[in-house]
Image (cartoon, rainbow, N blue to C red; front, side, top):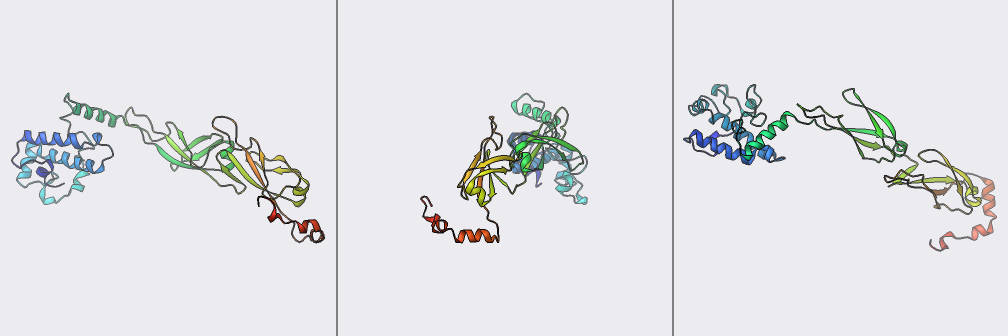
Length: 301
C-alpha cells in the first residue's frame, strides 16, 4: 500500500471527518460485494480499507505523521511490508472482516443495508461445490447402473448412472460438497463422466453404429448371425446378396432417449474372406460371370 493520504485522495491536513467521508465514498465505489468478479477493484478496496484503518484512528494517524509507524501500521525500525502486515495476527485486510467499515454498517441507508446483508451472507456461506471425474464403460453409459467413487480423502460417493448418459455429462449430487458456514448448507458434488471408447461401437446422439464382419457365404446366401449390442447379443437376419457397406438397422437397440423410447443400432456389413483358401481361388478363377462383373460400373458407384 502507498501513502494512505494518496490512497484515500485527501490532503495530509484533512480533518478526521473528511477522511471518513473519503473512505465512505471509495467504499461505496469499490466494495467487492458491490462489484463481484472485479479483482483489481477488490485489491484497491483492501488498500482503501487499510488506509482508513490507519488514518481513521487519531492515535495511529499521529504516529504515522510523526514517522513512528509505516503505512501498514508497523513500527518503522522493523521494516515490515504490506504482505507481512496483511497476514499478521490481529490485522488482516479490509475485506476479510468488517473491521474497516463496521461503523458504516449501523446506518439506515442502502449502502449500510448492503454491508449488513453481505456480512450475514459471509457468516452463513454455502459450501463450495466439489468437482470429480468418474470413468465408466461404454456399456454402462447405455444401460446405466450404480458406481462407487472413491474421493482423494478416502471417503466414497455412490453415483447412480441414468441409462443413456454421454461422455462429459455432469451428474450433480445435492449436499455432497464442502460444508458451509453458519446456517449455510453444504455444496454439491459435480461428477463429470468419462465414457471409455469401445472398439466395436460408435455413438451419434441416441443411435449406435457397429461394423460387423460376415463371411462370403453369409453375404451371398444370407442367414442368421449374432450381433453384439451394448446390452447383449441379438440375432439378426442378413439378406441374400448383401455387399460390404450394406447397413442394416436393429430398431430400439440404441441409447435410451430422454423423452422415452430408444435410438437404433445400425449394423454395417464388412465381407471378410478366408486367407489362403485354394478352393475359393479355384472357384473364382473358373467363375466367368463373376470375373466379368465390374462393380465400379454399377449405378451409383
